[in-house]
Amino acid sequence: MRWPCDNTFVRDLGWLGVRVDPVPVRAPELLALDDGLAVELGLDPEELRSPEGVAVLAGNAIADGCEPIAQAYAGHQFGHLSPMLGDGRAHLLGEVVDTHGRRRDIALKGSGRTPFSRGGDGRAALGPVLREVLVSEFMHAVGVPTTRALAAVATGEQVLRERPLPGAVLTRVAASHLRIGTLVLVASQGSREQLAAVVEHARARHHPDVPPRDPMALLSAVVERQAALVAQWMSLGFIHGVMNTDNMTLSGETIDYGPCAFLDAYDPETFFSSVDTGGRYRYSAQPTMATWGLARLAECLIPLAEGEADDLVTQAQERLEAFTPAYEQHRLDLLRRKLGLSRAVAEDTGLVEDLLQVAAAEALDFTGLFRDLARVLREEPTPTLDRIQDLPRWQIWQDRWRTRLHGEGKDPAASAAIMDETNPVHIPRNHLVEEALAVAHTGNLAPFEQLLEALRSPFDEREEWGRYAEPADPDFTRGYITYCGT
Ligand SMILES: Nc1ncnc2c1ncn2[C@@H]1O[C@H](COP(=O)(O)OP(=O)(O)OP(=O)(O)O)[C@@H](O)[C@H]1O
Image (cartoon, rainbow, N blue to C red):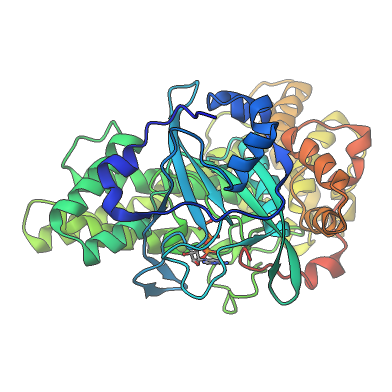
């Protein structure tokens, strides 16, 4: 089998990794394949489904054209620098140019030990692999920049975690796997020339509008992408859970779905990750944590910039400070659309914040709330809003909102239609994901496949998908814990 690869990372930056092949597994079995994505990548889905193709997706064979490499990177984990991480259980197989002309990395995750594995086994368990498929494909379907899941393959081997679990390998597709942590490593341990080479690679690949050799402009470009990304997360109630600098991409794609989760009832202080004991990466802290990671990026870029050190620090600070207004603007634009509004009016910030205060006070399901607002306009039943106790307060908010809508001169049905294309009816609700994964562990993939289908059509309300729109039992949410991708 041949893949149409053009491996610029190996060619230009091969010193920033170790050429190492994936470790074969005992009995590979294809669990999921995204045919559409395969075609986009210039790969033949039928060929990928064949025993030869599955062997490649499991890491048991290397397609011609691929040059597997484990990339080196560092990362600040929960605020502390880990000077060397790297792909301890992943192999970048190669890069292709997709049918849209975009360069894409194709990598395996869970594909065996590498020189960066430290004490780890190099493997991934089935549950986290299927979770990454479900959540990343949903994120793509709602238009959030994200790595994609091309395939998942069961290995026929067990991985030992707190208990033995079935193992799996994910085929992940990304604009690149360059992380802030990649630059942290090169800035701290490489030469100036090496740092300049990685920065130029990232610029040309992800920010071609930024002029070469202008590290401050590159900082601004990454700040802008991350501001837009985090605003999208917040508008969906997405909690990444582990925004370490090794999990923040230079491309602006979401990466690493290990401990992620979604808000059920709206509470901005929500976090679920077992390792995030202080709530560093709680929902409300995500914008601040993004700027913290971007400040680490700035530290890497400053030495490449021309000028007096003090001036450069001031310049970098100004560029970092641009995150907050950019983020606030993106978030307000997104929330305005969620409310069916298209024009910007000064009072919108208050309208949005007051709605979220009602949602917090009444513990309203975040996803159901926005979906119900369109139903209000259509005079349909509103299961989430019907929970509201403080009806006078709600009436006041509704009147303000309706007055705003009326001011835009739009027919309520037209506003509702826009809202239904903006506010997903299905999200990877935590309880649904856990349920699908638990059943997958028994060998039955049907609930996973059905949920995946619904998540790929997140705005499409269908009777047979009715239970996917129902909120979680509050007891489930109270006791919910996520774990770093194990
Ligand atoms: N089972 C394992 N064996 C070897 N290394 C591991 C294992 N699990 C995690 N690691 C390594 O620990 C570090 C942090 O892991 P983390 O869970 O953030 O990343 P990941 O989910 O493996 O990869 P990615 O960030 O690419 O999605 C990474 O260097 C990763 O390669």
